[in-house]
Image (cartoon, rainbow, N blue to C red; front, top):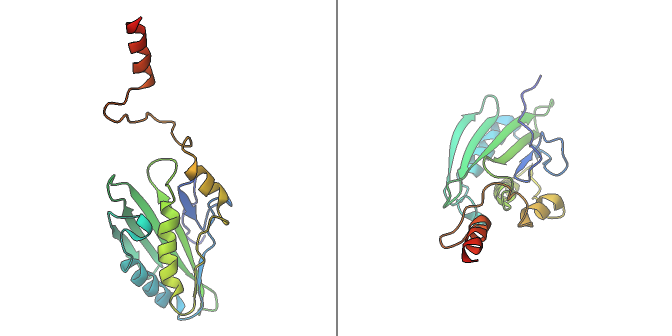
Length: 185
């Protein structure tokens, strides 16, 4: 079979051209001229020019982990500014049989947590915007209309808060409050 990127799980912190769910499926970006070598070069140039902090995301910068023009595979790791959260972003350039145009399959996923507060969408939009300025590219932006469930879950303060909540200094856990109340009786 032809190599492909991984899909996504059920959590709203991932988009992939291989996803089976409409909530995280991102249609491949298209290029219409220059062949796959040129498309890979375009993609690499746009990623290299990516500005950490655009749209308020990826302030910690990024590092290209793998770049394989011959197989059309590009793997980049992005990092958040303060927490050092790492996200994995992969691209796979696939030429059409005709050889002129083709598609770029895309995957952007958070390693930690259940939601991403819009980070993956904002990152992909930054890259898609850069590609769309180049001749022959089509890379539609991710919008609220296209991904309502992703937006809804990311805006829900209760979603994904299943793990132990980290307490801020001076904040009491519910159990701690109950113990104090018992002592005070």
